[in-house]
Length: 341
Figure 1 (tube, rainbow, N blue to C red):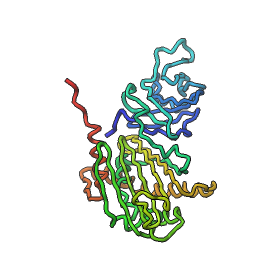
Figure 2: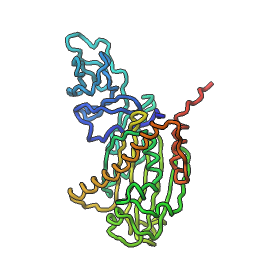
Figure 3: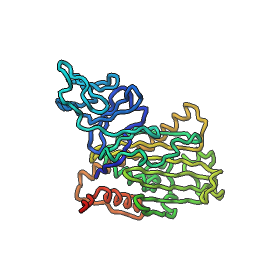
Figure 4: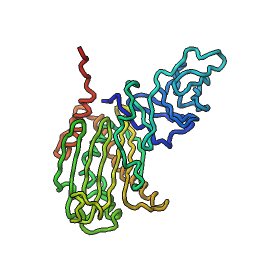
């Protein structure tokens, strides 16, 4: 169920410091730390001496020191100091993970290091656009990472899970277009001449009729992009003119930890409310936490019941088309490939 030879978000860049940071990615224990050069190192979080987590230790300059016996390793996993003995005793951390810092995140490559190419990262240009402002969050969720992707690719749930903010009943009435484009799944929904949900009315500063859009796209290994927004009804937003509307580009990164846990990183790049003070930005952050918290409650309950009743299967409806395609894409990517003759 885990895909190798992909970049996964391990943390926001500003989470990684000269203190060890433990993460689990695709069942691999990883420790990250920032070296004096500013570069990030990522090692298997296991000291090869007596199998203790390196993340329990400390960072000394460019090296990480095991808390158990003080053995120090550099960013390439090589033993550089073995207290009480000469040399390194042949000790080396078993795995060194390629890591790149880009778009404000620390990305770790899970798979063959020889295939790690930063050019394989998709273009998240919104995250580097000075015309946007950002709301971000990071969440630990006790569920299969694919359930999070399902949730993001079926936004009809907003009507009932998030009625106080982004939900409205018209989500069920609007025409739905979903399908597959190569190794990507997509969903598109447009609502014309509807009263905006509370979140969007406040964002637009207008409570009259609007046109609303949702365009979701799944990318391997576990990324969902959501282009969403509203504009005053009939002003051409659905045809491409968003000058009388507001747009939120939501970039969702889902990093598998174990079969039943994952980390979820989300950034909304917005072209509205550009001059918020600290209090206003804090309110946006709290709204994001509130919305995601509602999803987390559903997702963790879902995982609990999946575990309790393993013989029961999902029933798919038309609203599940995009998530069904995404799961097939994941299954195909995970399937063993025949060896060349």
